Image (cartoon, rainbow, N blue to C red):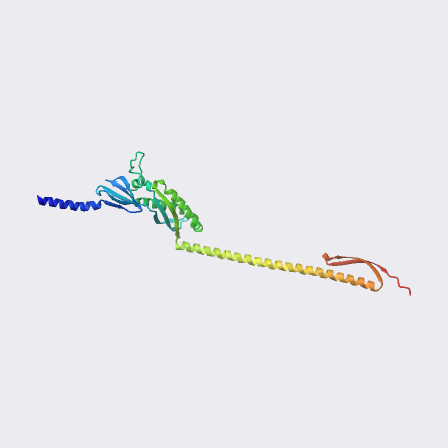
Length: 287
């Protein structure tokens, strides 16, 4: 009889050593736990240590910090070009939507994150699926060259589309969605590179031709200005020559005893000189 009690005590002690430690639950900082009793959601637990008999109650732990997710997928552009895409996604679960209660305080077993998705990994899988589908839809709506030429626009469009797709039913706050990489096939990227180089060469040739034309225009203008200068100089010289000739004629007339009344007109515009003079011979002095 003593042996039976001894054996029972030993068994009980062993069971307690197994059951009691397993019934202590540690909820770490940055996480929150949902407590289930025989599969039904009954409560949540903040960071701390709790005792709940493990054979009856279980803890489902959720990371409450911002989740960093890198998603890789592939898609086809509108003109059939293959591209590998990388999307960077940040989100955080809404802690007040971890479980949802009705107006009477009763927990709705099929609502909230714990009720609808059960685990964080299941929720994230649904979010990743939406991200992939919406990203593919955006990128397949444009031709490859258009995407290459305006990557920023399509990155912003992917961000907006994914944010709208991850709506209230996901119970998360989307922090950021960034299309971090678009990678086309090597052959296509080489053809694009060749096209860009050809276009650059064409623009360089046009620039050189325009520069040469501008130089030619400047040279032509310079020659025109020089010609105008020479013509003006010729006019001035002709005018000076005409004035000098007129002056000499008048002086000559005076030296031989004539009184000269003269009027003269210079038409420089036609490089002509004209003058008229009224002359009266001076009477000789009486001896």
